[in-house]
Image (tube, rainbow, N blue to C red; front, side, top):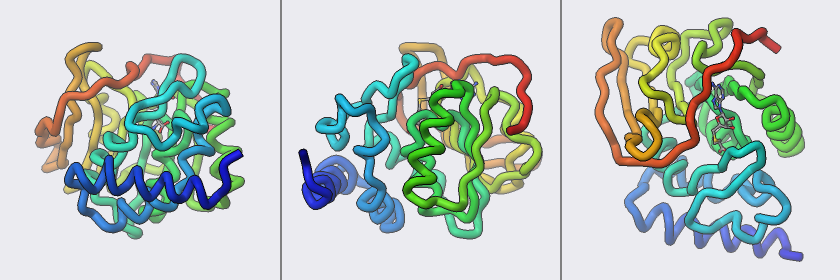
Length: 218
Ligand code: SAH
């Protein structure tokens, strides 16, 4: 069994070789990625691959994103301690942990109950106090705590759900994969007036953002 020290060395290598070497420079992002124990967020059989350069299955047909893509999305968001961040697609909770390292408060929505419960258990065990969880359809955002300074979507929709633009603050930033399977782009947007001014950062492969039943706050 690998020791804590062994994992921290793997994390160091991941950040140097996959993240910093590819141009991620934001110190707060790099520090958070050095700190968050990614191996705790993957299923037991995949622990030895937790710091490798690819996505991994997390059950229920879902995946934890490749570390580099997580870094690109997190850097683009420019999250500060003063920010309230909405995340759509809690999944394993790994991205949630990074956001909690950087933000004041993180609100995270997941449509698959089992994944939300599991992520909550791990994040509680790691003692994050600035995260609120909801089980429901992220297409609707999370109205109760809107507006948000930052919004991140970690599953691909055909277009950015309008509720998310509505729940974003003026000058707020949003990052989301958009497009049909096989032709998705990572979109970066800033809200000006009622509009989201968008540009594409790179092409990506994400699981789809599904449409669910109207949800109840938990
Ligand atoms: N950020 C996650 C990535 C998980 S993959 C991680 O680091 O592990 C995307 C997640 O979005 C999946 O868990 C999937 O169940 C969830 N998802 C898909 N459609 C959704 C929807 N409409 N609302 C909320 N979550 C959704």
